[in-house]
Image 1 (cartoon, one colour):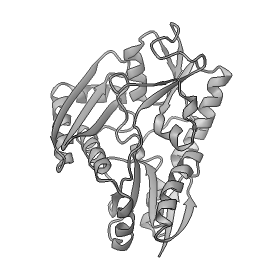
Image 2 (cartoon, rainbow, N blue to C red):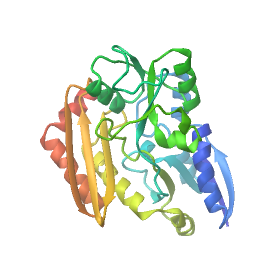
Image 3 (cartoon, helix red, strand yellow):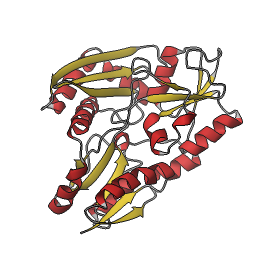
Image 4 (spheres, one colour):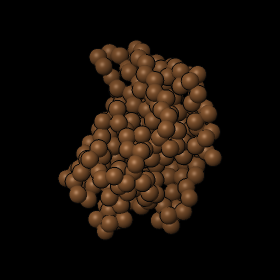
Length: 301
């Protein structure tokens, strides 16, 4: 069997795709097809970015057209509802979903000097940085991991915040100054997980890639994505969520933030692991009852 994998051409995307290709290569002939997405073009231009599918749209189109057989994405880039005809076929074992700080002088977030410049392009990270350090100056940062770290060393910022999982897959964990606790920096929905997307009607491919799936990781991201879907929050809304298994129970923490970090709504609940979508919906309803919708509208401007 021959499998064509569509993926972005960035170093991180190709590293992630390589993990999937190696695993699938034990069972099939594999070809990696790099596809440039709208998000790649906008990120390079440092232009405003809107829309949850910026990094997935062109890959989804190639998949639906039959030019590729599966797409490999960072799961946090997936819209909460996939295009008709596509399914989340597998979630491999999840990396540590934590955010991390990289600083020029090896200072932690707490010990950064007053008025420190912290680079991020994420409203979620911006809000939580300002919650922890209201005195910080949060500055827009774009580009791939290499570009951001280079600009940090050049002095554009005093620190940047990135996902630990990406650094792990690029074998750059030695860059990390501090791993941020979820109590300080709750991760993005799906952060640390990979998504393998396939056509709904391609049973042979779905059966093959299902071998790569990790059920606990899949249940966790299903709960997080259900939370996001009910909140109807796009990529520019400061929403965070993290699900984890505790014994046989699935625990989900969700949060919504004011863009300036002045207000945080956080809820947590747990359930049996067999209905993660219901758990996500429950946490979302609790957040909405406390005013989450108003904060999301405020973030959209």
